[in-house]
Length: 228
Image 1 (cartoon, rainbow, N blue to C red):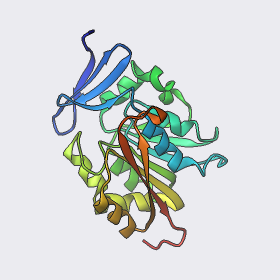
Image 2: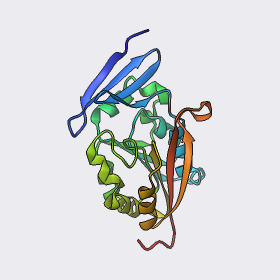
Image 3: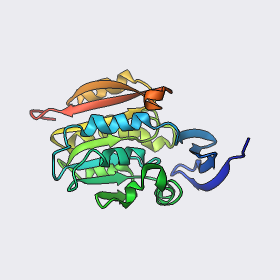
Image 4: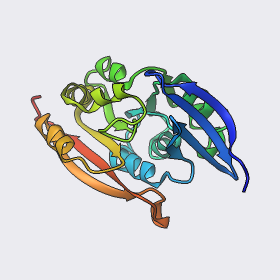
């Protein structure tokens, strides 16, 4: 069996080791030696994009935020659903992940960062949310493994009350928040409802029609009459 080739390494904001490796056409990002994501499992990311953007196909100037770049699959799926005049803002906390997507990971999702509609912000997505009140038609959060942080403990705040409130405020009056998670989380469901979202929970397979692990997409619709 071929050995894993190390393509890049860095540290997360809390000091954990992060690496990009490749073997036999598969790319894997690991944190502290544990697999965070693999290029062979991205079916649920496509479901995430569809859940958030299916109502925006004909919107000529849609504004969408993707929190978490990963291997670029979520951004690519989002771009493929939007019109030429749309804008997709990508907030990624780890600079090396952006570099890897402009380098060895780029071809995997057909170079989504090279699309003129894509705007990259190397920062915590919480900052992006708070700086863009009533701005986005859709927000996709593909950060960490969902409401329970895996990459860095700082990500927990995104899913707590302040983070959910910031996402609600950043959406336009009829916007959609879609959150990817490796598992269900009833407390997070209740939190979304408490902050004014009409919630739907969607399950998706990690390898699309080919099976794989079951993942969860929390889809929150901001009601036009929501006062929160």
